[in-house]
Length: 548
Image 1: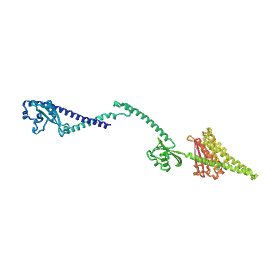
Image 2: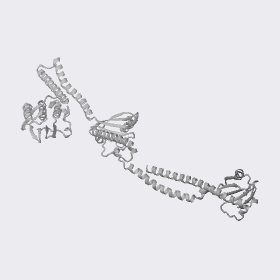
Image 3: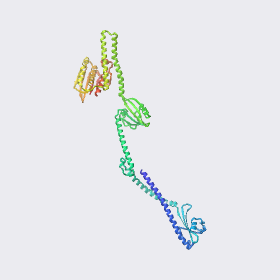
Image 4: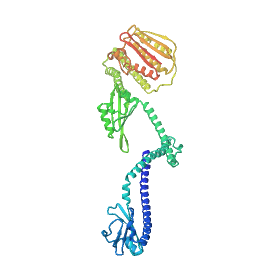
């Protein structure tokens, strides 16, 4: 802006300078011409009076370096000239000033030279003797005068341009300095130029509107960042070139990103062929979806394009952890297969025994044994169904109302009920500790302690021990069931709480049980927001702690 003002002022100054020089030169030249004509007339009158009295002899002693005098008779013949021999001059009868003087007593004219560098002024007067006296003088034309004055003109222009440049710079700076000091953050508070008031008022309104929009945008961005950062799902935003715009913490963990990658090509982060195809398809406006296992987890990758007015502006990648769903589906299939198998086994035994009894092939003395087998298998079947129902209730969190439950009291009830099975294996039962009251479902607490103690007896050695301890530790209630049984191999310890999982399937029929006891324990403990700790050494024994 300063340069434009400077150039404008300088240009105006130079134009005014040239115009002034031209106008002044023209006026001065015209004034000089008028003065010259007046002087010629006065000089002519003076000499004419003298010639009328003295005659042409007046010019014999006449000496003038400025004016030229010529005497012409009525026929146009030059009788005398102060500069040239009269006999050598041509007839002047056609000269404008001569013709006019013979006609009106006075005549005047002006003529340019052949080169146009000089202009000659003529004044003529009729003498008393009938001849015409003419006076003339030559002067330079305007063009010639300007050419002659060029050095002076250039000097004046140079000095004037320099002065105009300095003045223009000062004026431009003086004009723009208040503008540079305008407070655009508060346009309404400026009072530099009254003419700027409408613009500053409009700027103030726009500034206020922009500030409000920026504040709303920041709030929206902060909300977006908070929502995205708290998402369990991975979220990645890409621009139309596949460069990363944003990536939340969950996505960084999934893609194993440890540093800032904003502005980098996402395909340098994930080089898998599936992801490459999905990203390029999304940038072409298509939808892609696939599942893949990473770091022991099952993920679903959904890649969609981001469009506006039909144009693809980028892509969004959503990553869902479907491990639980996959695991649940796998467990459902395994559970269905296991339940089918576990139900078929006792049913086939019952059907087989019943068919033998029905056919009469069983000896009378063996009838009681077959009927006992049917009863045992039916009891086992009922237990299995009851355990499945309990697990279903625990899975759906459809437990009964909670109450105050004394863990020591429930443990004592369980050991009392298990005295007979324990005595058959010569297993010694013991209970130690103190009263611990928690808020829970008494029946579920009973199931937890019962199943842990029942397993400890089933998988114990003859003459072994099962010790149950109820204690308090760091504000928690702890039940510990410790046995001296066969122990659990290390490779099986992570799976014993799965449904129907048995360490040694070949001895499952011998030990009895449905294979759901520890799974019920796991779900019942989870229902009470507790946790289980397992310590076991093969051939030495097992210790399980339940912490509420």
